[in-house]
Image 1 (cartoon, rainbow, N blue to C red):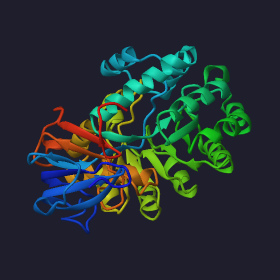
Image 2 (image 1 turned 90 degrees about the horizontal axis):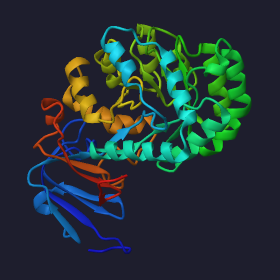
Image 3 (image 1 turned 180 degrees about the horizontal axis):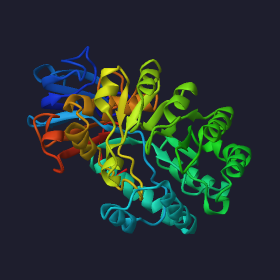
Image 4 (image 1 turned 90 degrees about the vertical axis):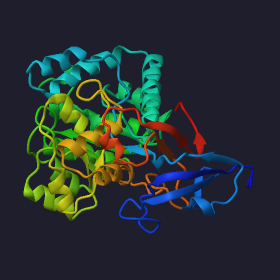
Length: 396
């Protein structure tokens, strides 16, 4: 069944197949039992009952295990130097998290060589892939000057098309007390220089970082340079981040931990995705977002791992799914959808996060009969096989 020079692959005897296409199966997850799926030239070309599966060049009997779309990690900070384990230990001993710890990573990142930064990104992406993330967005934000941010942007672009210029994370040490001056530099110099190598523009709109007016200026400069806005907002307290994201037509607003009824209503009436990052709240002993209120209001919710050295040093979306179900009152189906199709929507992608005809052949099999086990068996490495672009793979 080789076509166009590509070898086709059929996965059969799938106990539970999550397609995220309600036209193909049961519920919002489009679940099929005793299913099969065929990959050709990196895309899905057939989905149906295992007994009806067409022949293919490569056949793999899944043995009754579950298959789901590859996770879509829509929020990560992978270009950095150093680590902050001592800071984590201090938080566990009772010290409250503040955004200023980011400056420690800025200094370590600036000191790191390109080879060191590149090796760290590859290591974390390989780790992500082993836990099932087949698409990973990658932010800059630990350089915070034009030279370092350009370097970070170029390194991220060697691994993913989903590069985010986090032009305003926090004011770096040399701009302490001069956030307006930093914003002017970012808008006039950094963004025009880095924008050709990125897709997204992001800003940390939060106390201790940047206020509404400063964040608006950064996002506006990014949009003028052809980038699409995203926002870090409402992580440490109620604030303007959610409303600014909706006003700017941002693809997503991420964290969304402290929100008002007006914030939820604004999100529900917009196309902006609320990306929840339970790993960060776990690691900072922050309160968890009210996922139930967001979902019940009709807000589109994504789940991200938020891998970074300061507040969430994990690449595991299965871990985040378990936390979201246990502590954020999401159902297992909602959490799995949010970590796959929800992440895709946060990246404005329709070719990933779903296993339906014509979508990218990114899938994972679980050492379990159902996706329910991702929450039912927390901490267990259930991801067995990972297909990226239809190819069985173990490294990014």
